[in-house]
Length: 281
Image 1 (cartoon, rainbow, N blue to C red):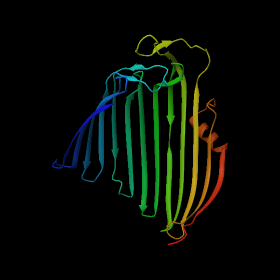
Image 2: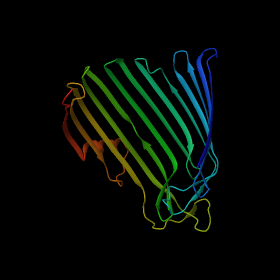
Image 3: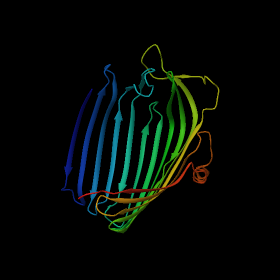
């Protein structure tokens, strides 16, 4: 059940700006037990300059609410009052060289801080070639993971997720594309938590029930080179090379070592040819 309201205001008469837009959005959602599961007030503002560059910032407030999903039916728990702030800057994407930057500050379900930063650059010297590189880093003080039967572990985590993509149109009907995406996360156990079985409330801290190391890592890399040739309309020939890996969660290393290991020990290393042909008119 939800009740939402939004308000927006666009201004085009401000000296030095092409436009300034402001919006306010409120979200109120309850589950069928009548418990609030998504409450929030969001305030956003965007400045579009005369050269089409944009600066945006937003602030959000999330009142106390209930999480009824993470536990997968093993018990709901209360999430405290939280806040968030985002700032971003983007240059004109129609230019040959454009870039973007963003920084965000947020809070996890336990109220602990979460911050991230992202940056990207795109080079498009003509309508046949483009190159884009995006980088993102995230730091979380309490990444909450459900361990079953109402038990949780909070982790201190660090994550890198870069992405690279380049496109080259050899002719109007032939395209060559290269893409690379890597996600690396290292999580170190911090505290253990449990749902209060007697009442709806915040998660309760408990001692480590197993006294075992629960640290984990995620290291996934996917590389793909694809050639596409449109023979007649709606008929294509694809030649695709794919290389990728997802390493075991107990392998820890520096981030530079993780990416080298993911590339040097692939579990997918294949070439595929696909012909799609349309018969008839």
